[in-house]
Amino acid sequence: MKLTAVIVEDLSVAAEVLQKYCVKSGKVNVLNTFNSIKDALPFLCDQVVDVIFLDVEMPGGTGFELLDSLPYSPQVILTTSKTEYAYNAFEYNVTDFLKKPFTYQRFIDSLGKLKEQSEKKEAEEELSHIYIKSDGKLIRLENDDILYIESMGDYVKFITNEKKIITHNTIKNLTSKINPSVFCKVHRSYIINMNKISDVRENMLYIKGQMIPISKANRSMVMSRLKII
Amino acid sequence: MQTSSTGSFELSNAFDVPFLMEMHDGDLSAISAILSTSSQQIAEEFERCLILAEKGDCSELKRRIHLVKPLWGYCGLPEMQDLYQGLEDFFAQHPSPESMRNRLQLEHSNITAGLHLINTEAYRIHEYLKQPA
Image (cartoon, rainbow over all chains, first blue to last red; front, side, top):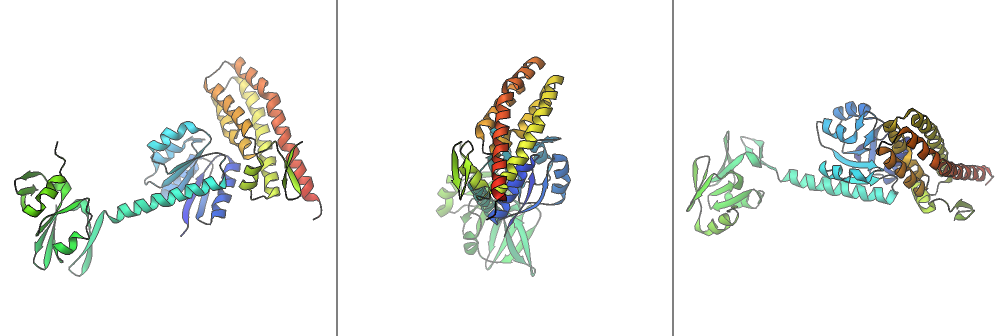
């Protein structure tokens, strides 16, 4: 699928060449081209795009001011003739920095970086939540909302700040499906969110006042994941 | 004039020929168009810059130089882009109106020569493309 893009560039020759590169690549669909921040902002607030090709020094404000005003964070490729902006580019987490004029090959390298970044973002997004079946529907739970998961025989109970959800599953099965950087099996009957532990005492840990046992088999692994200073 | 072959037409080696050919897929009419458009804009902006120097409007002068600076690069003349970068850096130091005028006058002949190169090449391509195949 093609990436949707907007070009924000006050030098018409530069905008035309960039547009031509986008068409030639067959990978980018340019929705619009603007020669000022003032014109680009309403469009970009209304229309979410995958990438903005953004000049820095523009009439009516800098490209960075445009990024500050956007309600979302698209990928950004800065196109400028001034290398001094490299530091700001880093600060704004832009995907790439193209010094004008640039070759088609350099542009293609940038598209490669875009793809890499969006795959990374998708992978992170995928690991940020789970769906569980309950009451005949699929319920989305953000990892950050889950305090711990408790076994109930053939069922498990997801404990969040606001609710408890029971679903048909097992701790053993869940262990291989949850994000291992967030969750940890501490006992055959418990998986906990490592970020929610309030304190640890001997073979117990506490989450929101709830005591959770740590089995002998899991204790050293749990302890190794705590940042003890 | 040294030239570099592109089919039966030879672009002047004063230009970064591989860059121009890559940017436009060897399309001579596209190269000619970008040379003509850029030359016109650079010339117009330079006239504006001379007026701004007379007025002593340093920040607008710097902005104008910055705007057209990459056009030299798009024409395959990176050394002229560097010359403009030097001008931009100079105006960033907020020199006196007299220094501004002097600096522009100093570079005037280089800029005129650069524009002449571009116009000549655009014309050569134009004439070549007019020939029957």
